[in-house]
Image (spheres, rainbow, N blue to C red):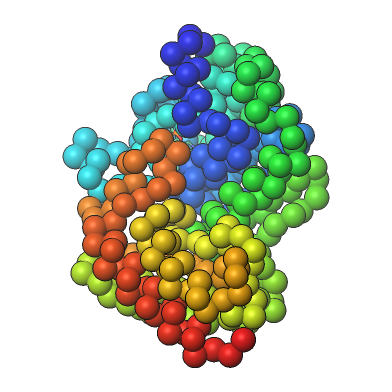
Length: 323
Ligand code: ADP
Ligand code: MG
């Protein structure tokens, strides 16, 4: 592909975990109830994501790989994002920096179609038997981009990051059964029970899950928030376990998290953080996810009031719970 395509791709696809995130988000947008992820060689050798979602009609498959082609957004929808993807950039960006094979079938078609592209060229295109849903396989990631490859040498760190990304997606989508295999070993698995507490048990273990203190729902303006915080005797040394889910999207909200931290810090041992999940529901028009192409940071209307209310709730919960 041309230089512009590769530079643009770099914004979304920084590392193997970005590929996993984009592919799983597509599977969630497709309404999957089951998603299987497998990774080899830190994601550089192979990443495969398979779902049982709506699939892509054979005649539309080439479109899915075209830049800015998305099936998810009508012209006037930009102010109301209700799907995880909306830019139509992920698949073409991945295809610009790797070999990508996409196999897909819909429930009403007798056969599916499989396309393999690399560097903007179609390597293979054939009919294929595939159950309803989609499988995307990404190989040789960054192989033609030595500079980017140099940044992701450490496969252990990449595997850890991939596991974190899948963990976040699992927390955001408790109704979906998700399994992550790394080098053929299952490292994470959820049952898709729909119950976030069960997901937290599956991710953090039953001891932590049963100690979680629930709170909410708090209503602030057109936002509603509920969640769980771990009891003060089960804290962590990292902020990584502060999870915020806004309208089904795992997100970071600087303002809310800063207010929260200021509230819990005096109640916990120095440098310790709770495991915490905030589930925020808001009018999509009041949520701005358009800040960065990686779509992690969100801005909410009234986030200061919301953050203050949550912080106060968490503070009083922790203060009431003996360590
Ligand atoms: P976006 O998610 O922003 O629309 P992508 O490049 O990630 O852009 O995907 C392009 C299009 O390909 C999507 O709009 C969707 O129509 C289709 N697509 C991608 N992955 C899947 C999937 N797993 N199941 C069904 N459709 C998919
Ligand atoms: Mg997408």
